[in-house]
Length: 219
Ligand SMILES: *Cc1c(COP(=O)(O)O)cnc(C)c1O
Image (cartoon, rainbow, N blue to C red; front, side, top):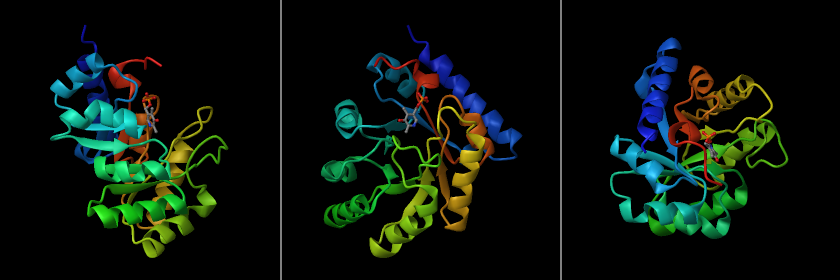
């Protein structure tokens, strides 16, 4: 039962259409297929269909799923990172999209130095200033980006956000794009299954899509 490739092809096509409608090059938007909590039977057909960029929100789960088939893939950590997992995360991921506090920035900088390996880094911004959500709040974003660069010597490739579920996402995507522009940050990771076309319209350079590609998660 491989429903996934049709759903996958549909998401790829919708991203391309949204980019074209916004006057953007579809190749400028990367699909990050979010494979967290998905059974391998759902992932395999998407891998076979040519998808090479995957997102995971837990270090241990990601390593369990991908360590043996790591070659040729780009793996992104999109979930919160505890400092005691930073060593493994730096060793394993190609990008870490959840940099959101100074302590983590410091530990990542130490590990990057020690390992001589540097995942691309995104600062997560809690655009809705929600208590339960990770990310630096918008009023503190500029100072945090400066600290990442100047205090810890990190290169900030992009910004990431997850808008509040109950609000229209557009204003949150626009806010993230403004924070990126005024700080000279090039990439925007925004948009999930329910709103990736809107995110593309607001300038997303990558969209993180799970259930629309693989089906509903098992837990
Ligand atoms: C789970 C997750 C996604 C994907 O969510 P879907 O709604 O299944 O597309 C995207 N981003 C983050 C940070 C996630 O944790």
